[in-house]
Length: 286
Length: 240
Image (cartoon, rainbow over all chains, first blue to last red; front, side, top):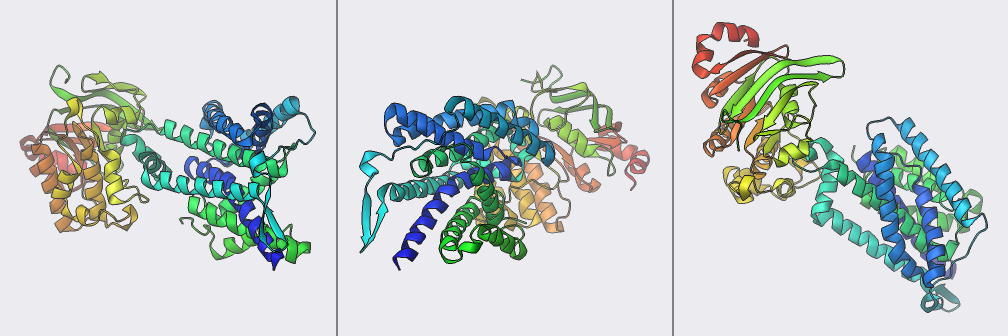
């Protein structure tokens, strides 16, 4: 029983965390139409930013306060320098350029931080565990992380559904030309969306750093799993990314315990199943 | 602020290409302040291309476009829209994932000198159907409702000129009548209208001036009276 409970918590926690990265990817893919292979690199750079800033400020949350705006700014710049040239090009060119970005970021990471893994401490006030049942305790940091991810997911939905910026983003997703013809510069909307996607991936990397530490290639699996989630949830759908992330998180957590021999393929099997039943994803539009 | 001859929109010598195909060939097109102009021609003769070029969605290879006395030939569509040009595209361009109300709020903006002739309430008054459906998504609307929404949305930016492509295409006769009477109201309020449609009789009633495009060139330009006098020639151009 306590095994089920702990895997439930683990699944929810990793699902909520990966949601941040996957929602960024689905926004960029759905609205800009760009397949961004370098999305995992932003997660990795987030983890390393957490390492550096936690070293300076002594607290991963202070690292976040500086790291998130920095990641946003970085995304803004990368869109301006590279990504905007991809909008009217085919997917092969998008894949080539964003793959090149992966190589650049990997090299950058090697030069700045080296190839040894680094652990990042959770804040001291969240370093304990809470007793959930007899013989089962759970790290407070992981619970806090779940709450933060939930709050971020909720505010993302609110921004997209209720605000002017959200309306612009939804409109640009369905008809970029009409957005222009109504007097809005769609270039700026796209730049902001890409920057937000970058910041989301980096935020996930920073929040995860005290759990999984910072090491080269820490974002690789995140990229692949995020793509799986985008396919399951439906391209461009935040709600789809949320449901998909929780499904993947739980399937992975329970798969590891109950069918360990298949655990490495279970999320892909889930994706294949969704593709057969609903080719546009759970919340995707045809 | 208009051009010296009183035109709000004045395009000269437009050459526009779609890839390698040369669509507009030296087109001159002007619209006076508050004037209603019809744009006629068979399918594929360049009407939509002309509207899209005026709106800034296509860049002409040669020629110039003056709008409100400013050269907008190289301007982005968004800048031209903010300068006071409204656009109702062929196929309507309703945002399917926004509600009716959101589609309208989206475009709301004061016009030149802070004019707010058109408000959401005013739009709901001329299109009560939209008021009833304000909570519905764009993709839940009938063709007629979509057209009302796009026209309303274009007006909410309080434009000086509205370009309307295929104003009544695919609409039921009753809805068409509604659209025509709305266009009359718009014209009475002093907004210039450029309208493309297949119903020539309605256009002759509505517009004071008519321009016929054939193979990307202006072959006729004149008042409703002149159109009737030269009907034989024009009807050959239009294939009616």
